[in-house]
Length: 183
Image (tube, rainbow, N blue to C red):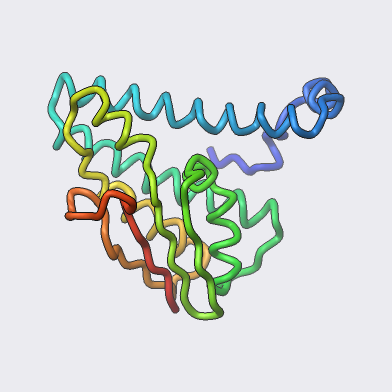
């Protein structure tokens, strides 16, 4: 059975009316709380799998989930923002900035030109939380690389995604990961 986005409206009419009555600042706070909660659930699932089966197994599962999720999210954003096939780099980055991953990264730097973009995560709440709990850095390179690659390639198969740095790579304290997108 294949379901299309139009078969699942994004909220009921009543839900939309309730949200439409909220002041814009409160609505934005509510929206970002929902995004943050998605990532909290992801983290809790990861920690549970990691505790039971180890970091390697948890990372493998996480990588598979986020590769699929990135493709789904790119398709939905493409449709929502009416983006055609073979999107250019600025358009890909514009949609990526609207993805749940990027929205949950408040400490990022984005540089975009016509044929190349660099996204840097200067502080990572996930990694910082792990370190506060006495856990090692999460080797997120495999997870994030697969996710970003699938997101970009869903929008344009000619795009190349390169990891410039990501744990467990050595990195300076003010940079957790850096990604390059180019045609």
